[in-house]
Length: 155
Picture 1: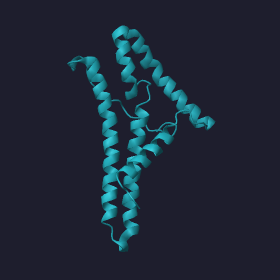
Picture 2: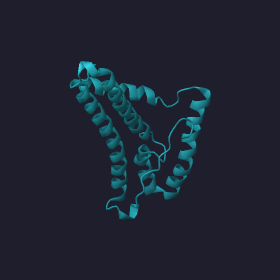
Picture 3: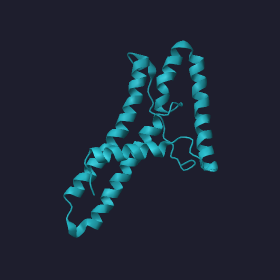
Picture 4: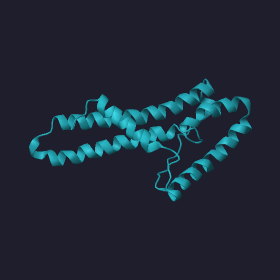
């Protein structure tokens, strides 16, 4: 963990194996975002199901499971939103790096080199200055609140 933030290894793929390289790179990025969203929604649905079948006698034990599933949902929503940031190596960057790769592969490579440094710089500034440069928490809370209401989760 670095700066209170876990670091994941990007999904490895060989661009030469893709039939339509630029389109398929974007689809791979979208698949990562969708998997986080679907895992978060599934967690909320399971939590809702557990709560609806809860017995009043063991409600305290059940809240442990519900809170764990809710935390899992928030983490996955946070990862989805964070990965939409348009900085390499995050998934959100593939929308414009595939475009730059067509024009100038050298420019796209520079973006990948500096994207990580910019991301680390932003995380450092947020951590040490106590400021919110990337308002991810606000978006995660909004998305979570919306989906909780949409799924009819009432506690």
